[in-house]
Amino acid sequence: MDSRDGESVFAHLPLVPDPPVFAVMAAYGKDPSPLKLNLGIGVYRSEDGKPFVLNVVRRAEQLLVNDMSANKDYLPITGITEFNKLSAKLILAPDSPAIRENRVTTVQCLSGTGSLRLGAEILAKFYHQQTVYIPQPTYANHPNFFYSVGQTVKTYRYYDPRTHGLDFQGLVEDLCSMPSGAVVLFQACGHNPTGVDPTIQQWEQIRQLVRSRKLLPFFDSAYQGLVSGDLEVDAQSVRLFVADGGECLVAQSYSKVMGIYAERVGALSIVCKTAEVASNVESQLKLLIRAMYSNPPIHGASIVAAILKSSDMYNEWSRELKMMNDRLTRLRQQLVDALSDRGTPGDWSYITKQVGMYAILSLNPDQVQFLTRKYHIYISSDGRINMAGLSSKRVPYFVDAIHAAVTGGI
Ligand SMILES: Cc1ncc(COP(=O)(O)O)c(C=O)c1O
Image (cartoon, rainbow, N blue to C red; front, side, top):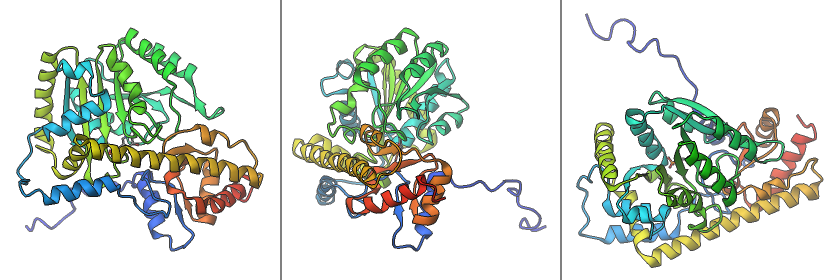
């Protein structure tokens, strides 16, 4: 009998919808309206709404192309050694005692996503506590990393929709009631989707609680430099935790901060108590990587390493980050001013208090749908907008749409 006869062995698989953010992207792509505006997916756009390739990235790529000694052999399992060292220094500080004492193992990963997933893998395999706490709300993919390896995912209070700010009391209460040893995921800065970060004083209180309750912090750093415009300032939360000598995991992504989304460049660092533990941990990471994808790709990480190791290119990168950040800050102010000039009901001033690439607008799902239906504006159903998707000239159109949505245009 022909094996093509009969029902497919996959016939029982139900069709599942695309993840919401990709569904929004696809709907935007299909919309023929010249007025359409995509504030959904979290990618940085230039003022003319186009993808933005940093000049420093183009320069680094030129260098790579011209380097006739470069080849395309397999990388080691852990990736480019220099990239790993430079990435650890970027987030933990060049003079970090943890790095000097060889207590940090860093491996090149497939962007922030791959770094988070690898972190989840090693925790699932070896860590004694299998409950992971993530902020409520958080980046939509966060639960998946931990569910995928069989861990239990719970949330801690983070955002207070009434104040549009941090629910610090709720966060503290939740940290206090977590079981000892639980893993707590923190976003290092530029919290996605809320644009709300703890102050440095609050981070210090969080650190004290995390350490006293013997919780294990896992940092997700995807926006270093895009929040304050300063790479050092945006690393403060992580550095605070590493300075106390305790352990933590840090996933870094270069997607947004260097605009190299499609290159898939990131790193996972695990800060340990001793150099011996760090080297054992690294040996285990290698086994996990070997079984998943064997070794990472070379091109994107070479771009990053070229930029991080040259003071000239590093400075250019810092300047470009500052420029991107200034644009985000300016757009926030323009949006709030325009809503106020239009007399749109509500207090929108919180938009300028939120930071980084995102803001959560106080719109309900019906109002979000109205924006899409009537104005061809695409945003996440929770009201999150990507500020970088907006531009000065589109602010009036966006404000007209919000005004119509909140004054009952539905
Ligand atoms: C908080 C956060 N972490 C991680 C990621 C993963 O991004 P990537 O896999 O492109 O590095 C994102 C992407 O939006 C994010 O917002």
